[in-house]
Image (cartoon, rainbow, N blue to C red; front, side, top):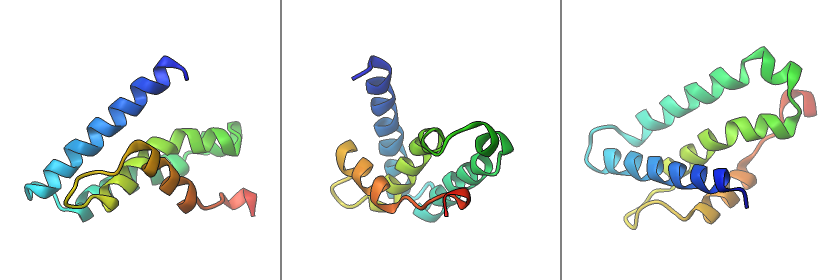
Length: 102
């Protein structure tokens, strides 16, 4: 695996842990974190460049970190955030096709 991929994996899990701590301490609600992340995803997927210049696989690559953080936010429990492997599986299971793939 590429070293940069491992670094991104670590960074995503660190952000997921921070989000979990913020929600567990009542600084932000799960819904507020979810809304913020979904706004970013909507901003990216609404960008014409994403549809005109990128393949569906590349679009997924751009949106993957946000989708993983959304999934981590909504899947957190008393034991914390699920593992990276489990989160990536969940992201894949919940992925919807883009409008131009229907």
